[in-house]
Image (cartoon, rainbow, N blue to C red; front, side, top):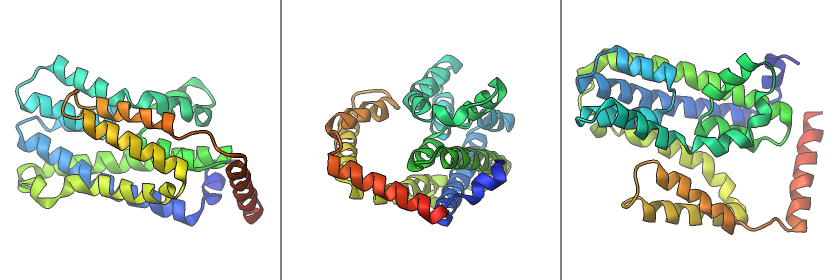
Length: 243
């Protein structure tokens, strides 16, 4: 089954959510490009970072370190700390990166919070693979184009904080997460993780609060037999609908 056929198996709501995330990423990418160039960095720096690193949070952090007077090593270390959160994500979506080595390397480059989140929402392997690659490729293209446009605009955008571009991305992610909070176990893990992250923020380097939030998983508890049966029935219902 080719990728086009796999994409056709995805629900319309999933495709809509991917499009919304791409839109939010476009705004944030333009903001990143503008901030980098207006801060005094050469045009090629944000473009190279976007292609080679492809991690918005790490890119913002690295550029922030450089613009504040920090060295290259400090910028790289900051980016690595932030990207460390992707390590557990890699284990959870490893099944979608099967195939030759070049395909696994390309898939690893596309691993982000968003691609992992969309893949984990799908119960069937073919759908997990389809939404992972669809979201990853779409985000990579949109992000790099928007960074380029933002960098070209440079100082023309002016104060990006005043436009609220930095709030667009987390707002869209929050909207995507809200339906999952209907499940009590998920809600418990999310609340505990959020409390831990917020409490740790003043005391640890940027990026570590997100990793510490994984503690919330310990409080989610194991699913009851009734909950597991309901989940299996839901999966079976989706399979019948597809058929």
